[in-house]
Image 1: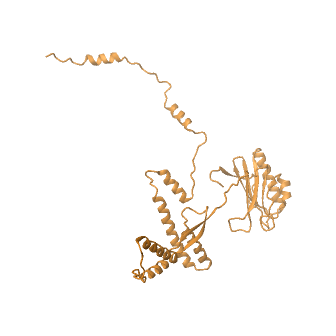
Image 2: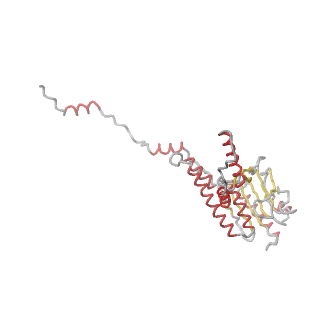
Length: 328
């Protein structure tokens, strides 16, 4: 759940750990998560009785609260759950093969859109995404193709070996002017660059961290191929080089920001690298106006009276003690 939500656990008065059911309270919403195994150690009727009693107690505890019950119900009869709890089932697509195992029940219309999508985790179950607005709650992942030139010690060695045997003083070629000579040099240099360091294309997504460059992404893919092939030592060596490249990339990112002058940009860069978001902490009932009124009240003495002193008398008393200068 999001860290910004105020979540607390709610425990049934007749809590029974035999059933894998967990309830949380989010403001005026009670969310229950249930796992009903294919071969439970309890009877189906006992679980239905337990669900019915739990929902009834929530209704007595907070009559205006909304209830959502979700999880893997396996072969638990949907009609029996609806009849016992009074909740409505809103998932209507298979979530594992041709079976509808993962379900969501709600006490009132809360979610207007329900989608069954492929899970990002390694599971034979699909993920169920439910949200209340018609707009998509999670943006689509965008893909961008980027070109880069791979550089390795083997490529450097091949290039240096070729250059050491290359005759740059070729007297057979004659050029008319300086521009023509430069064009020929540029074409030769570009040909060597494309031959020894050819361009490659790789796909970056919007979910990749900022420090993942096309070269780092290609190295990560090669590491995965080595791991799948069983070449563990080569994969570990490549992983160490990838870690150094990522560290260098992060250092370069922070070196561009002067924390002494612009601390806001520095912390924005730190959050970008760590993946954390800025959370503004607020306290209910305390505002700038309430703080000003509080400190104004404790700094004011209601019994204070201003004393009016006679300025002329004070001046006269001081002047009477000052000796006058003697005339010359």
